[in-house]
Amino acid sequence: MKHFWDETLECMDRARRRELQNERLLKLVDRVYKRVPYYRAKMGETGLLPSDIKSLDDLQKLPFLTKIDLRDTYPFSMFAVPMDEIVRIHASSGTTGKPTVVGYTAADIALWSEVMARTLSSAGVTKKSFMQVSYGYGLFTGGLGAHYGAERVGASVIPTSVGNTQRQIQLMHDFGSTHIACTPSYALFIAEMIEEMGFNLGEFKLQAGTFGAEPWTENMRKEIESRLRIKAYDIYGLSEIIGPGVSFECEHQKGLHINEDYFYPEIIDPDTGKVLPEGSMGELVFTTLTKEGMPLIRYRTKDITSLTYGTCACGRTLVRMNKPQGRSDDMLIIRGVNVFPSQVEEVLLKTGGISPHYLIVVDRVNNLDTMEVKVELTDAMFSDSVKGIEALERRIASSLDSVLGIAAKVTLVEPKSITRSEGKAVRVIDNRKLL
Ligand code: DLL
Image (cartoon, rainbow, N blue to C red):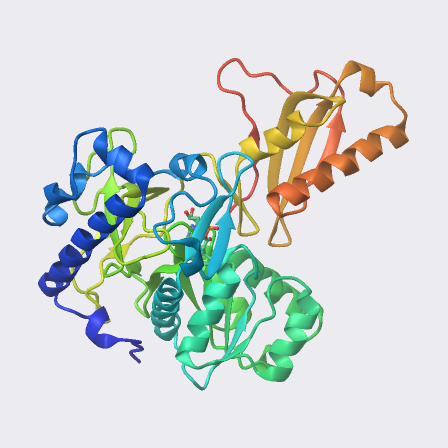
């Protein structure tokens, strides 16, 4: 069965769509140049003017943006509208303690709901569906993104957010949720808990799930599908571009269709910045063609993937990206939350009694990610009482929790017990084996 939200736009002739993208690009460059002094200055470095950009063929002349630019303009200097037009603010992890901030106008929220409506419709969500949203609600874009999209479709939304899993399952059972949206690892955890609670899967009405915010494999898909007896769809996105709904899978699951009438993709060589031809693996870069609050031109996602043009068997002409194959930076995704080792380091460096030698150990236990931070004590602190050391562990754990937004186990270890490396320090051991 084919599920479209807007068949005309999703299946539009590629040449016609390119015209639309060209028109939008010209308006975008003009708007950003006039309204964002930071980007105007960046364009000025090479003497570039909006009039130099006549179509997408000139896009490569424009400078890239990265998380560093967003840090330098923290919190609001990348916004292109006055604050009274901003109706929502989200944030995700930055490369250091400062988060990456995103502002939305009412039109941006409508656009986001629209791309999420496409995404959810493609997974079979309709007005008749019961949509359980088990992504976290808050500064993270997962919960509210899925929520607004499901409301736009007209489904009955059940905003359970993440956590309190037994209650989630009880409601899923009692309300007859037909669809769920959460991270793939949380979906597996739910499957396991359903078994543990002694439920019979036949008593549930769940048909499909929309899973993303972290990398997952085909094997993990099979596992989720067989344990929950549903069809599992991939969904990709990042806060800077809109949140979830940048791209989504159709029933053929041969890559994720990018909503390219709004988010124009390029693949570049991460080292040289050169645009690569179709099919090449490289870093994904997006230009938000219509966004108002925080439009971004050539934003480097750091996600490594490739693009496939050409019509899909579903009829959509929207370009497809392959499942992201990793990142070109050191960002970790733990239970769907982005964590940079530099954020952990910043917390540790602010704490007395410990040395700057640490190791982050990530693992997956019962399908849920765990994070342990091992830190060396200073010689002076090492001779302290067990109580003193435990109190220090708790203090660090609570600072990490408030900075990262996830709980980490902190283990203080003897001075000089963490292996020193001769080259680049090894700060992270990731023992997770994606099934
Ligand atoms: O994770 C938005 C989102 C929410 C997407 C819910 C899908 C579902 P951020 O927190 O800003 O936004 O993290 C963005 O997560 O650059 C990727 O590295 C990674 N990521 C997101 N979706 C996928 C996916 C949300 N389906 C970063 N597969 C991105 C692999 C993903 N990685």
